[in-house]
Length: 121
Image 1 (tube, rainbow, N blue to C red):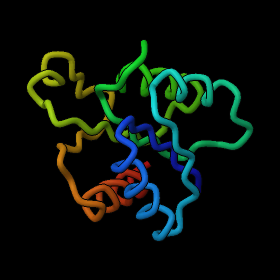
Image 2 (cartoon, rainbow, N blue to C red):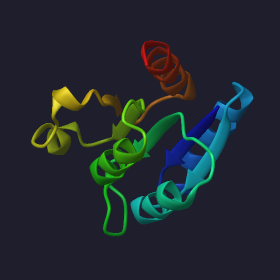
Image 3 (cartoon, one colour):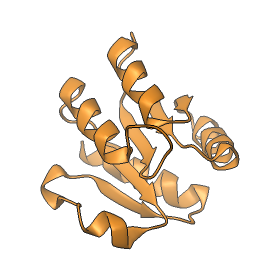
């Protein structure tokens, strides 16, 4: 099961990727929203869930990555992480079905939310 992990903080990305891999997931990791958009357009394997930071360097933020991914995978479970829930709250649309994971978080929090999202998909 391939999980796309989009996180600009290298240490967080490495820890989360290792935790996901230890839990049996194949992890595709990129550092920016722009890289994620390119990967989604040109990846030959299905992505079964998206875990993305909201604020990242480059043009595309986590919301744009999620919207683009849903074009290719309409039922894709999406988890958006951020340490700034106040900023996200202004643009958050609950109708999209995205899950919010507040930073800082522990790997077990991400895994629990991901398993729940995949079970409901």
